[in-house]
Length: 552
DNA sequence: GCCGTTTTCGGCCCGACTGTTTTCAGTCG
Image 1 (cartoon, protein in one colour):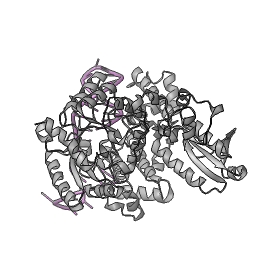
Image 2: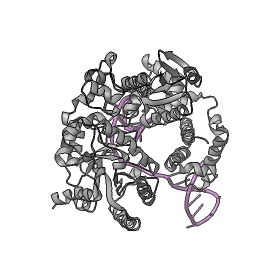
Image 3: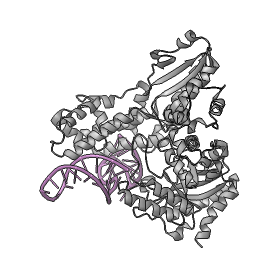
Image 4: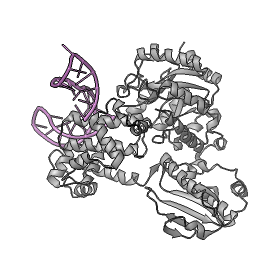
């Protein structure tokens, strides 16, 4: 089955080359639009493709269909091939650089013969970019900074991507007879938000038959590095008895700083497993996720292990539906929520300023209210009316206070104007937090892991404001976000904040992201009592009521 | 290239920002 992502990329690539060649802008747009539509279709696209029913999808006409079907069949596109005649394919990667569009790329190509990222970097370092007409020193420096960032990012992958790879390796390991036991270790076992290498510890009884299963890239003592096509290294620590298995797993799990601050002496490490290892230095067992240096910045009373897991989640909050930019209907989202064991929900589609996401104006909110009343009754499952309201540049929300009274649950999030100064952004968000109708601050720092830095903001002040105004802080579980960052969770917990763990789901499949948010919350040591999603229906109603009381 | 129609052509989103200019082009969302 052809990868959906490859097809999306293909259409973008065709659009880029067409633009580079100065073709009809509407034609270009048709390809980009098609790619966006496919992305939004998610896994439904696979069905349309398989059944050759793409013609039924609005926006995918005859031209795009033939490109897609050809690629699905042959793994290549004659359309792109003929466009790329006389142009090296590496030119395409230039389009992914922020700040470079078709016009600038054309100048680079025509005047300096630049056809790849490598050549671009070289030209920047030789100061040849700054001299081009339409460019300048600032642009050159921006490009260089962007290229540096890329090099750094390329060393990591997102947690969900690493999780997927790890699962593949686990499937493989469990088929090998000589393997008695295995576990993820290091970054993955500690649940880092981005992962630079995938590591396992295995317990085996026959080394030879085990190693035969892999193509070995390198070997160091008891550790093998495996040859793979993955972007990051994969390695396995091999142990042959239970004692060294337990010790190796323990040593490779905690961060170096954690282990040394705890005062472990590995030569004298005593006991049969992790619980006993901790006991031997008079420390309570610490769950793997929390074995980080930052652990020691927690107040003693907060150093308890997290007691959270998916089964504690009662309320599904902050998700999107086809009312705004979600891919699935409210009804199918609720069906999935029930299936996953949630007891109630609050739908939070985008607000009216979010025109890019088909945000809801007042009228449509009231329309949605009717639908969810109906669903609540039909499915015997309470669905609250929520909204993810844009925080406008001046810090006000998207609706009048008078109208906000109609909405049960208000998530306030920044979606635009990321470039304010730190002080303006901080003021803006604090004002939104102080709004008497705000219940939750959504993805508080706006970062997109391995792609966009958080906006400039004084996170401490934001957290203080949330604590002072009884506004929960989101742990956005989308693996691209994982925002609030776990390092700030410690500070927020010390301040007594409440949290909300949300997939920010735009489809039923996204709901499973919740697990990553829970892992990150566990990393912060968060207890069920600190999470509003863990409230029972009645407790949640009480939580919402606090607002009605302060708005009397 | 796609869509929709007074059905085979004509219209398709644009405002904000940035860095370059010398009044604006290019890029982004």
